[in-house]
Length: 497
Image 1 (cartoon, one colour):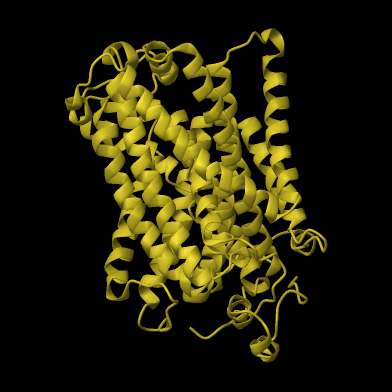
Image 2 (cartoon, one colour):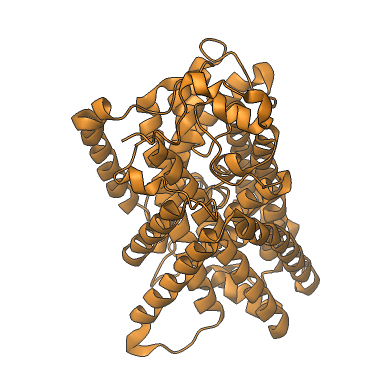
């Protein structure tokens, strides 16, 4: 059912605009009233996307998937290549975010530019991707800290892991429940923590490196099939194929920057600050991530020996190169950043769930769209997002979660960009305050083609389980849409574009 008290009629949407802020005027023109607390600055909007990208999360916990493919070239060449592509996607998204700054983000864009069917599919893919990214980050954080500080667990290892994972994600939900002010404070802190920790880690690696062989960053070495007992990547003789698989390291890391769009209704001057948050988070994460990971590769004492460590390669490098007190301090700082990354992920997922429920798109929408009158947070969406993330990470492996969230998020990124490409200059003629002009359409086409290629790479072995999960998701969405949602779901309010 539609949330009538959250949506405005065309007449009321245009009434009394002079008495409210420009941000609220924009929201009213889109058919909604201001419910969430709008107090985020431009920096906070940038920081929440940077916190979800978190080069200290994906860049560290997935390091082996790049390095154990073609060695240093995955970092030296693969990372900047994929980050350039991510910037194209970010620029394309930013232009749409400036025109339509709402909590629904990509869902609203696809609905407005392409119709409610496009929006419905985008919403489900984006929501599933955001929930799985929360699961991936928290599962990765547990594995990271357990690898950094191993402790005996015995027969209770599985039960302990489940309890710790539950504590992580439920505490993140509690912090989100307490309001955007507290969440913003913590994600702002996380933005600084990520940059400082990455810089210290890079400088430490350069300082303590036994020697610096810069050619490593452009050298292709086939490390597939290592270690023999539990290979990170299946053996292949094709360096090109392995290089392509290695692109999943930056692809998984540089995701979640749509958080700047999902928090647009809580951001001041959202038409400018939301697109800037998207672009800056990708640019700064890409640059700092490249320097940090390149320093790690350059500090490796023996490349072949490191590759044989497989999933433990990062710990092998840290413990071989850095003094123990420094390594332990960095481990703690990285783990804390990963926790905040999960916190920001819950924020983004809950805002997407709230926006979709506000338009009646989810089962239980009447409950999921509720906002706390005192705290002005979508508390029902917060707790539901956290619980779904917990269920997912208890039953699916980390690598499969990472692959699924990457593919689902990039599907949700490409759909509104594609319909925006079709609508630009035709049905979509009014741009927001931030736009690229005529450069938008070629940028959008590059983003669409690249996303299709990335999706194909993301379901290759060892992530073939993602094919089954995504195929089942597609079948369920088709049955649901053509079975009953096509007639029931009305989509967001109509607006002139």
